[in-house]
Image (cartoon, rainbow, N blue to C red; front, side, top):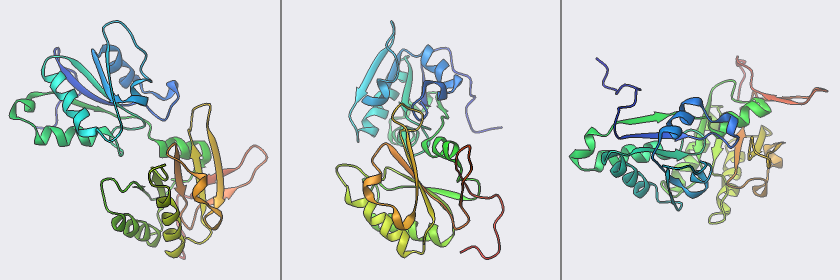
Length: 263
């Protein structure tokens, strides 16, 4: 018997954590759209809550950044009281987003929360949307690293960056450069170069699928901190990643097979 709950929603209160995708309405999954249509309450960070149109019978609970656990507890309390609650994240809720925060809150919460039904509804995360726009830079083994040091020390970020280059992964970098920590991405680029990143191609994909979308591909030695902000996902290619120039538009991709002399 499976230890996991059924994906079917119960008749009364329930809690769903849904990913709204990278920005375009067309990239919200039908499953997430259906949950939002049934919801009595939407809980989330203000910019994401504002992506859910208001309607009669829906209460939108917006909160500030860095309030993930308080947001999760509020959503659980609403669901325990019989409300139909959707916690919204951008991208996929399980990738550096709210699904883990909700699980943490449930683990630390009172025994009564053990009966709250939870569904995590996947979405299209930024690295997948960016990869699709550019071609297929994640076509072989890759990893994702969050460059924010709010919840982990910088020394751990640096170690993971070095090991990722050593293992020759393509690397998706989330939260590269914020106003509060503009120096972090410069340090990350330096670490990647010192670790042997060489001239690997780097994709800067900003606001993919929105009117502000902008993509740029440069060599690692040409990448500068100012090329990224918090709306940008950065994909550093492996030693095998290549840029294919063609009249119909360039393609950045990593071949499915790896040669024996990969660095």
